[in-house]
Length: 97
Image 1 (cartoon, rainbow, N blue to C red):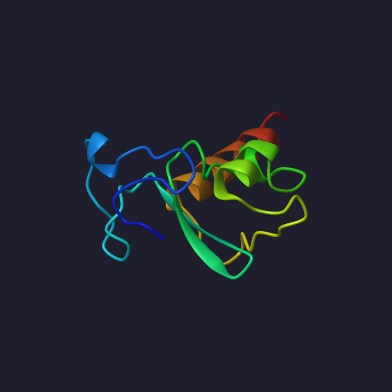
Image 2 (tube, rainbow, N blue to C red):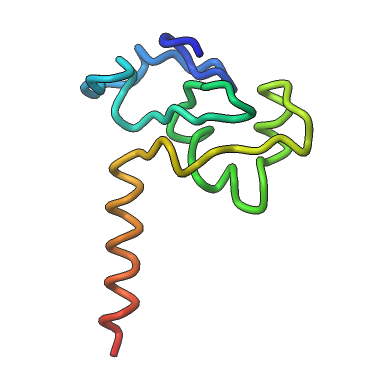
C-alpha cells in the first residue's frame, strides 16, 4: 500500500484539496481496501463500491495485477461518506409512502 498515490490508477493524493484522515494519512474520500489479504490505497473512483459490484471489476483486477477470482473484504474498511450516502438512500426509499 502506497500512501502517496492510488495503487490502481496512480492518482496522486496531493491532487486532492481536502483534509487527510487520521489513521491512513490519505484524503478522506479515499479508501483502503483489503483484497486477497493485502491492503491497497484507492482513490474515490477506484475504491468506489461500483468497482466491486458482482466481484472485482476487470479494470481494477488488471490495474492491481489480480486474478479474476480475487476476493475483497469490504466489511473491514469503510469510508464514512459512503455509509452516510447509503443510509440517506434507504431513508428516501422508506419515505416515498
